[in-house]
Image 1 (cartoon, rainbow, N blue to C red):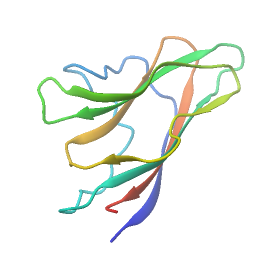
Image 2 (image 1 turned 135 degrees about the horizontal axis):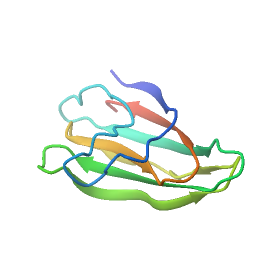
Image 3 (image 1 turned 120 degrees about the horizontal axis):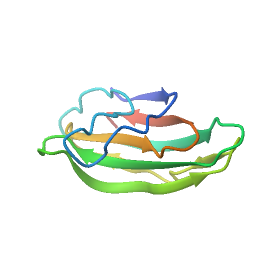
Image 4 (image 1 turned 45 degrees about the vertical axis):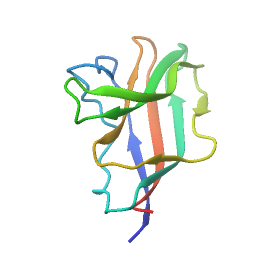
Length: 123
């Protein structure tokens, strides 16, 4: 059965590596994908929670079955978010169609960021 979920990640870390052995900064867990189904990413919002500094964020779809984990596609790379602002990275829909595809994020060494992801699971 399909269901809508929101995944909230407060304080995206700068030490996470998206493409490489240490690709561990998953944005959260989704249900296992049912045969012939997929997860539909319908929203992804990044908010800079720092009062004075810009923050940069990378968001990617990563194949976790590869060693090291491999970036399949970047949704945003080096996205600059001004202090106290937000950026919506998804305009439309993105489908994750295997259980080994995960959404990963990391931020630069500057500022701080929160991310909210809206997903329709097993659609």
